[in-house]
Length: 465
Image (tube, rainbow, N blue to C red; front, side, top):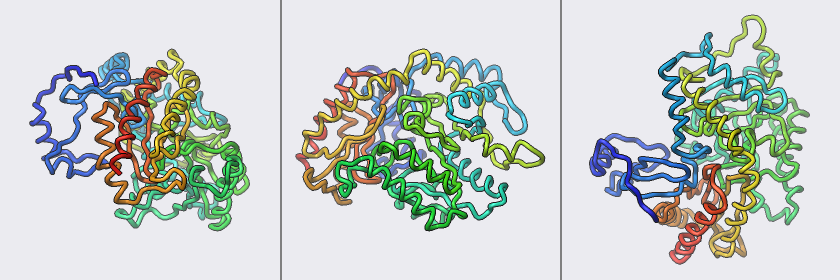
């Protein structure tokens, strides 16, 4: 692993670790890693698809930060446009007022969105975008004189955010139990994990129809007059990158239309190139009623989120005194909107979507070479978004118990991959997986480098079981 000098900081490594231990509360993390003296990795700089820590060590960013830095680190033009905008108008709300950047960005997002999704409600992140869609779905049906339509359906192990409403849609019980009771109305159906669906044999399309029909079954069981919306990611993140089988979303759209249920495409991760399109629903041939998005809209250079809504849903708000009493102080922030516009310029100038579509098969092929390892059970995903499921027995697909997952993922894999020069995610919210979502700028040479690191660390992990 090559090294370089880290960017200077105002504090020494020991001082930073002490301050972190005493005052920083990390997200989704065990604080004990700092309390027990191990400290926490401190990232100080990024350039392209690499990041550097406070000790000068260099790593491949195999997760784009958190599915965010799609255009890569160190884009000076994004920093410069943010500075220029901050000098001109650093902040103004879009509560009954507007500013040019929010207007221009809304117009641009609507131009990318399919069908009649023409209205954009800004937030500051993905969870807020999902929360917006949930509230809007319930309110829309009340305005239609159908107030009993308030329930929402999502998939097992799916992650849709942490606000109380979004958490009710999230399908991971272990993430919810400590916050119960949650907002009522969330119901779960099977996801599209074909690897764990042996009863369907090799018929992927039949499995897709079966999985979609479980949504219809749930709507009928709960009563169509009570169901407001279905929330689905194009490729489900949590559980390890479950792509939709052929025909899945076509059938889901038919079901939603049949029972007058809104379809929300949660593209917080999948939008802006992750699957090779501005919006991943285009890849899979469906037009939702709402799209939620965030993360890579600015490639992480400034926070923003959005809920993009069809003309049908917007219609009741065009007239009279009807208002959507919902919003965020920093939604549509002038600096974030300016950065988003410049970031989308980069996408178009450098043809990043086309780059992903062209190179995705090569990325998949590189990762599939790991299937010869006894610990690798499945490689799945799409675009630049892949998961590698780890198993104890390939023949039976036997997975690891909780104690084994603890020792494998947290006790060894996460640190070993990082020490070997690859930042990615070892996750067991479903079955144990290693997830990869690198910046969209990389190509075959980087795929090979990632594959070599994974091979070495996964081979060692097997010897430790």
